[in-house]
Image (cartoon, rainbow, N blue to C red; front, side, top):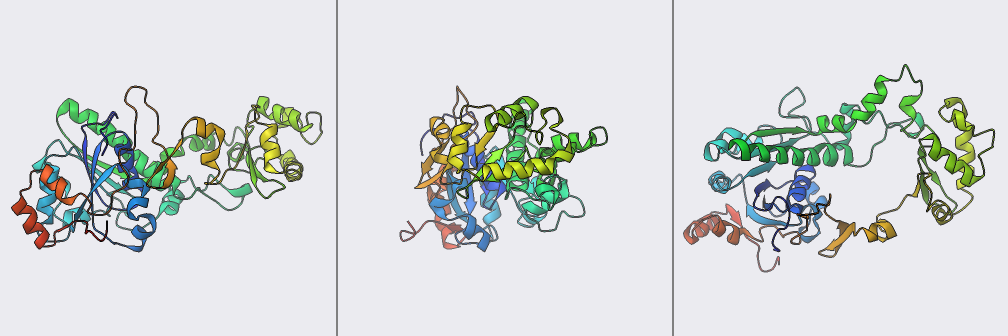
Length: 394
């Protein structure tokens, strides 16, 4: 593993293996230089097999893997010994699971009062829904954010696994950890972080709640950003590809009309851009115009314009875009093209220090580094508390 240059260098994180927001949080910390030790078992559920997979698991980049069966007798004591030397614990089980494993917050705090115990769930640790299962779409739905996005005023829609899992979940948890690390440095005390994806999704929608509060004073304002307005939508082009059109402000809207030769067209009154009565006809006209040429035609036309028009790129195209290449926004790790660490720090830049580990790849070296003796290792391996990577798996 390459040495860390990031701002979290020296921070040691123990992450309980899972899928979705908790591993994403761990990835963000690892990118920023934290030493993230992943506790996991090989195999696992269908979901883990779909979203995981050894070297291909993007969220595990920069981490080291310790193979352990948390349900095995003696496993809790192994984890507690690790936590004595850790700054952060990340877990994403339903409420009560860690307690049943003998690894609840009180037990861990007794071994390490400085430990930040970071918990990631969909509904939170308390409340009527706390024990229930759910997924990103459910959390976004309950937060109000899903309803705020309606396709042309019809059915609600949401970006896949972004509102709840990643933005409202993993990213919020990482922010909470960063805040708790600062507090622990000041006070010498750790704390428990209760991060709920539903609440995170609602927080991401703060601006939409702001708009919602003004709906009576400004009729139609709630539909400016949900694709109901024709100047904030995507349009099909002649080649079947798509174009994003978002000139919300009048000055940008005027630039689009000028480029399209519509500045004096009665269907597009510049001073009545936000009058919803004009929208159906505007949409019909714009749809026909953009469908008349391939996407590249429109991309070239608006390349140097502030009209707020950009191509909708797929995941093969995005890394090849000149702007993203100039920014080196994508990297390749273990043969997988993926987004580079973000945001960019000038003095202590983030980096991907190693490829994603195979399950149990670092079991022995990690436990030795944490002070376990060879006799301890032999006993734990013999009892199948620990898993180490087999030669065949490598």
